[in-house]
Length: 499
Image 1 (cartoon, one colour):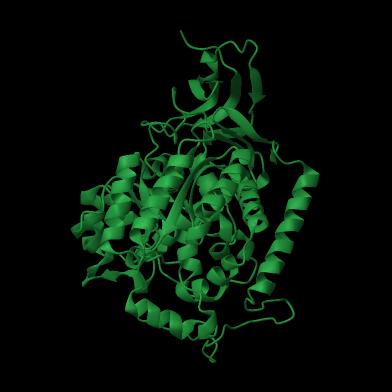
Image 2 (image 1 turned 45 degrees about the vertical axis):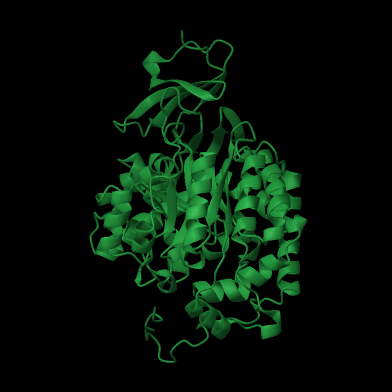
């Protein structure tokens, strides 16, 4: 016997993302506790009984978006500090020195701001890669767990680590760092691999499966080229023993594309690291052979179209990956190499970037982009059994979008309207685990006055970090129409830096 619903959404356009990709309009979604118990046309709607009823006339109901790769803590460094820099310049001169002076207030404020913005764009699940010094792993995990717990989001915290510094990157960082050698800011590498794996095991054991099962902890050998073979295999083995996935940055920039004489993807395949329990972020610097390796090993990919463009790294071959059968999700990446935490906004970039890369307007359709943010994202992070589509028995993780705005008319296709016309502000209500966590664009854990205080705190924290870390100044008083080193001739195009 089907459980009586505790929440009933009716009169909606239901974008199911089920295997048939049904769009049911007008339709209903019934929820009991944390699960979806019914989906169908309004003519088949069950009796509401004592259930809370949401009239979604003029709205779409779709699976909550899966943000397959992000870094919440870097949000305080957006707003101009990071503009116009390549990846390792961005890291060495802004991100790492900035994060080095973070305290508890910055961590809690960054996650609070991040979750507020994520919910307002319909994100219900995030894979958050955490990059903090080794000694701060446990206290940071505690702070972030509390902050994510307040938000209600489904969360993966992926603890990053490194254990080596290749000579070519050490030389690059020394050359581009704006800091004296006595103030060297490294990438947080720890030489003692045994200590790293032991601490990872401790963090996973303490936090994985908490928050009523909404929180997962994964090991993350942060960047493939910054981790030894033993570190990569150690993380893989730990993840398998703990029943988690692992994630890493792979082939993001031209400086990350080769290891031990092979492409980074080929190398990871050669040592047996890749597989269906690995989520590889970026994969921009990948050729046909790399795509084949990723497909043959079943490795999942999180593409980050906006950050890859922001940092000038290029455009990942997503259309080829999908054609090869690779499961691909979308990540917003750091807010300071994106600008926003807005999955709806990033969908348009995802589709248009592929059209531009292949000079083919059909390279990535609106429907496929929307799949990548929902069921495709759930597949990429190994959670498709539970989330990613509006189907009976799945977790009730849903976003309700108001489609009555004039900018969404005329329309013939909901997927096209959401990907190419929507801005993200249309998300009205978000449900995670069957609980309403945002309604009327107001998170249940944050009233208007508390939001004003959070925003003011974020600005104060950002100002303090920029001042104490002595980050490069950027203000409206120094208008910059060209970037440092740009060609003097209008319209001239610089060549990409060599790999």
